[in-house]
Length: 398
Image (cartoon, rainbow, N blue to C red; front, top):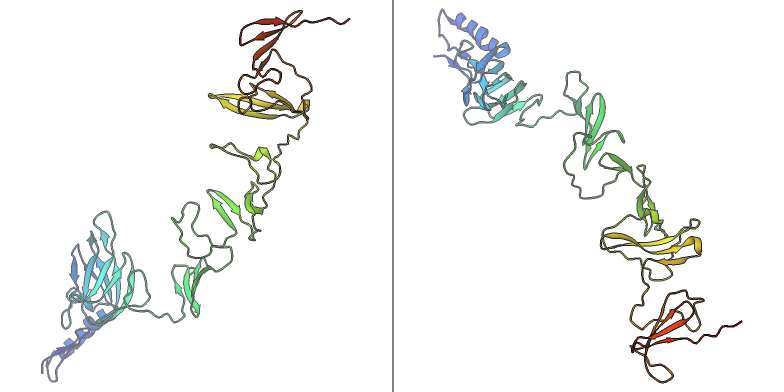
């Protein structure tokens, strides 16, 4: 009966009565080569820059070079310019696989893909990583879930996953449906059903001053104690204020609700760049210059030149000082004073009298235009319609 070979390790299984005189040698070779390589063998597989490198897998006792897939520890070597494939036999076995490849270009180093057979299940081995994996000939099973792609579920069953050399960075799920991330031996973030939260209140930042997130999208309510504008942090109010209130700043980083005042300090009104109006639906509008002897001054721009149009003199009981003429809104339509509100005295130069536009006089029903002027010893009156000039007949009173 001829020898056969085991499925996974290709160990020679001698038939009854076979290999007379050499049976012991073959058995020794099975142990020294096949079994020993499988339990403790380390082999380097030179992948070069090949797209696919197939591990050797010969029958019976063989050298490591002729039976690479039988070894426990497979070290993948070579200089690569892209991710390459190492093809393993689709049989049951446990492996330690190390990606010891280097970069042959400028964009690496690269990962390696461990594939079962010509088109079977794959496992990614990141560059520099060593993975303890098992295969049933169909799937890969990553024991410790190191860097790379895990293609089958791993159940840690509540055990802690340690990520760094000093064992102070971990991921754990000690409580059901709660995952805790620990860094520098301190709980940092907790992931539970429907919530991602810091483990300690007011302890974890989202981004830094130099590494900022791009955009944030929330479908719900965002609650915070402060908000930043550029490099300035502003403390927000803790309540929701009252109807009609607005948010104001104290200039030192604190925002609060305030009630709109019925009066506004003029030094708080800034220069605008559009037409503005000051209006009220009821009551008076009061401009109150409360400083001692202070004026109310109306200014404007006349053909690009800044001018003072009107000054109400606070040091002289509000005397109005106009920069130019005072005109009625329409010709021959407004009075200066009234029958009950008369001006006290008039100080003027010439007096021009003219009723030619709208009204007849009450004596003979005619209209005229006259100017009264002053002389050294006389008053004169000029008829502007016919050009005649007259002198008032003045009598001196002793």
